[in-house]
Length: 224
Image 1 (cartoon, rainbow, N blue to C red):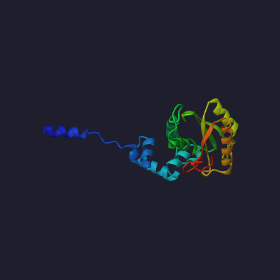
Image 2 (cartoon, rainbow, N blue to C red; image 1 turned 45 degrees about the vertical axis):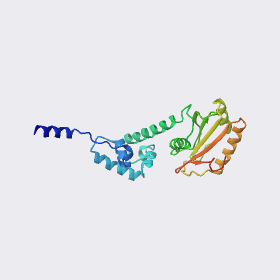
Image 3 (spheres, helix red, strand yellow; image 1 turned 45 degrees about the horizontal axis):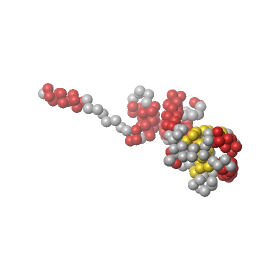
Image 4 (cartoon, one colour; image 1 turned 180 degrees about the horizontal axis):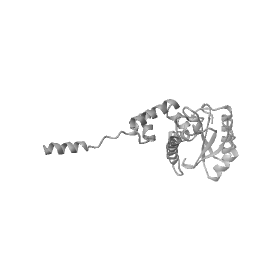
């Protein structure tokens, strides 16, 4: 009898399997992030309502940056939690492009650029400066503008590349409209950048346009 009781106690103390984040649904992940200490099923229902109202995780992330009056149902604390989560992802990716890291994976570069540029409300033009072995020297936002565009000055990009002793440059900018297709103006500035850098024997490796879908590589389109 005592043995049975002892076995029962041991059985009750068996660790409960922990679900891995990758196996959770969007609503379950959001529940983990925004957990308030209330009833778990109530938190899950709140998460499901938020996802439905804002159109998914990305819609929620965009809403978290809006003024309180424009994000009905998403309170200040939850909005801050979402911004913190996005900032963690952004910094983790940026560390993968830290000084001295060799860019051997175009996918990593595209993921970083998409994360930091896609949902910006104004157009941002960023540059990744590389040495002769394609190791990162710096990743910097050089220009920003209105919703419709940013003025890009090839001379400033070239001067910064010279100051860093860069041998190659990757540039990117976002389209706040969400359309990833390079415009005629994008193609023109790309040619001007390439020509300005070539005079200094610096290669322009690619120009990415970031929108709602996959980033567009102008190099892969034959536009360089």
